[in-house]
Length: 206
Image (cartoon, rainbow, N blue to C red; front, side, top):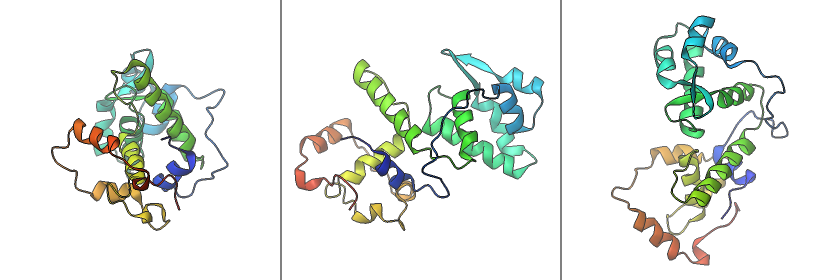
């Protein structure tokens, strides 16, 4: 079972994106400090004070932005910083509780209409591969999206209807509204995988 660009694009339901315009890191990107100043409208001194180094990764603590998200006088800035936090803490959570420079760069380029699906998919593969090699390692990526992708295949087991892939349906919104099953154990999922039959799985969107 392998996630594909087409499947992730269908699940993410990204609007206003030029799918032929892929994200590529700029050869001479703006420094992290300048990016922070531009994103937050704060001073150079403030930005420099927030920057940390965790596991060889340049980042800032989420707590440094939390107050700005709540109290920044520019409402659009608040929304952008909150969206950035979701990308960094949920979709690419490489350094827990921190926002890293690579994701800030990626987030900034999204405004130019680039297609984020290949980048998100590549991060999924990178993390799954690390889990497989080390065996005792947590998945670092958008676990919610991976879960939606898994459930989209088990249309009989999980009663997932085929409208999962219709343009009028938003899988992630449905996932958020769905009540999370209580007391679901690892053994439950092992049992689901072990007892799957060919007719329980749909391999691609109709």
